[in-house]
Length: 370
Image (cartoon, rainbow, N blue to C red):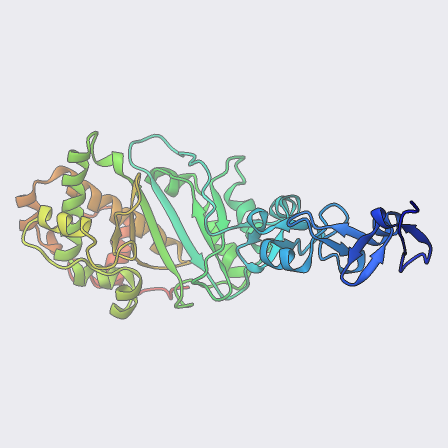
């Protein structure tokens, strides 16, 4: 018996009915179907090549593309949404892995979540990691490179730069952990700050910038119990001397409430630490952030591009750590701010305390903050 045939809508030739491929209401022969159509790699539906929302390697119907895929904004490659990468400064532009890694190699400002393995600089047990925000002259890779060329000019990586969404038009400079002596003698802070100013950045004057300092927890003791006792006294010192530290910080009370809230006074250091561990008031946006596993973070200070202010801030924190480490709870509770300030001997810190009228009533003229 003669096999039934059909006429292919594309080539116009008769073909056995067994070779017929239906596309909507059209009938195609196998050869024309192979030439004119593709199979969606996601759902298996046959679609015309002209309707392919993917590419030759990953053909897709429009529905599957919309639900599960996107295109690299740089090279146009089809990528699954789970495999897309985004730059922190352009979260609406997906990238494939190759384009993303190429973009990272060619930029100096890292993503906000970038966190390299810490490189400890200097010999000691107490290390300070500085996060200094600068604003007003662009989140600019060339500017970041110029700053890092100075910071890392001794052949060591001392500083890297990161995106920070709280800034309007700048970036954050982050140091690896360093001893106070390294910050003062080896880290070229004078050149770094001078370069940032020459590029048009401000920090204090921007009003958006903070100076955050991390200190390693194991500097306070070998056990968690020992560390907690010291940290409790640090928190108590901040609450007891809040007005003086507010003046030192150059922040407004409203800024601190938003970015570095106080925990609230308690009678005993341990009570204050227990309160902080239960969530306190501001979470990580607290004057002393306790939510990092290996460090505590001091967030109270306003940003600065003035060298003496930066060094004085590190010296103040070093002195506070010493007081908390070597004094008992009762000794700390009995110590006045005047006694604390009188024990400050580093010249940069003494000068800054005098500028802020915080040092035994010996004011000096202050240079303008930047």
